[in-house]
Amino acid sequence: MLRKEDFAVIKALKKRDVYVKDIAAELGVHPKTISRALRRGSAPSPAGRRGVSKLDPYKATVDRLLGEGVWNAMVILREIQAEGYPGGMTLLRLYVGPKRALRPSRATVRFETEPGKQLQSDWGAIVVPIAGKPTRVHFQVNELGYSRRFHVWCTDREDAEHTYEGLIRSLEYFGGVPEEVLVDNQKSTVLIPSNTGHPRFNERFVDLAGHYGFTPRACRPYRARTKGKDERMVGYVKNNFFVRYRAFESWAHLNQLAERWLAEEADQRVQGTVKEVVAERFLREAPCLKPLPLHRYDTSYLELRRVGWDGYVNVRGNRYSVPGELAGQTVAVRFGLDDRLRIFHADQLVASHSLRSGQAGWSTVPDHHAALWQATLKVEQRPLEAYEEVATWS
Image 1 (tube, rainbow, N blue to C red):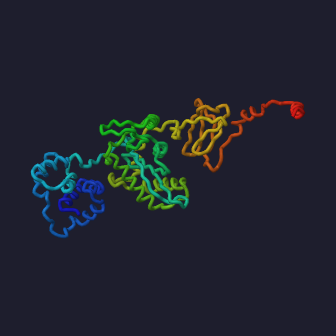
Image 2: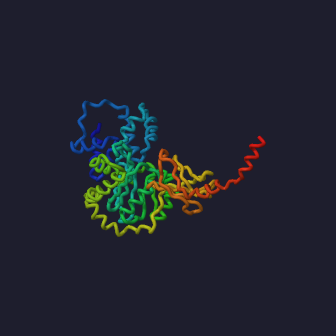
């Protein structure tokens, strides 16, 4: 239950335009509790008189330590235990927790990025019916920091290839590239997070950044507010798009509706912080974006396979033919999000197939094995008399 001092904290933070969600996180309560308190204009009335707390005689010491900048609860606990405090950590945390919102270094600072400066990227997930079957949909939201214009792409997984594909689709949607892209610490982009601002990025993500000319940046661990604009858009997509549209015929239908909703709803909204229509604000940001490269980055999966002696390679539970002369050799296999399979040897395309399920059977191009069939036909031709001699002797 909120106390009077909690409500004082709420009012102070609200005057500084701190989001209700952030205030709730600081006080450890649900955002609806904060909203109700703001509507009510006060903390809820206590049901009865509170009893004396074990911590009461030591609150002056706690307040003095907080005033000196000591916010580590364990350090404070040791200090008041030395004065005779008989309680535990829980009482102390309940008392100190609400006061952390007033800590200067922890206050949320609202900052605005310049046009074309930054894009923030994040993932969300939700279960919705697709073709009549409940399906877990992963959706990537990429938002430009200045204009708040964002793009959303829905797919079936969050691996590296889909992360890169979603980012590229957003850059193509915006028609340009920002100076930097801020991502979360998922393995597809960041191999080793860092609190010093020098993470180790995934090598392929660095390659993608170089291809498009943006600087990769990562949120510091446990500092989600660094990427708060985009994380709020994940909730906006869930509570708006997936409420307005609740069932889809296919993945293509889902993404078609998403792009229509972006144009008709999201781009036309008046953004709450900047108080401006997103599409109109984007008109000032678009000229600041760098141009897209001439060639699209290849986001397809890349794996190595050894060709069997029968001239086939195994890929995802099925077999696909390659030219017979490559039997026993290693080839590079690329399969894209469009289910197109390409097989390379010495950087040369040697075979192309459509990915098929295991039940669909092997995929064979007859010309691949023509030479193998010719070799099997080159058998020794023997006259019939030789078989007659064998029959006579027997």
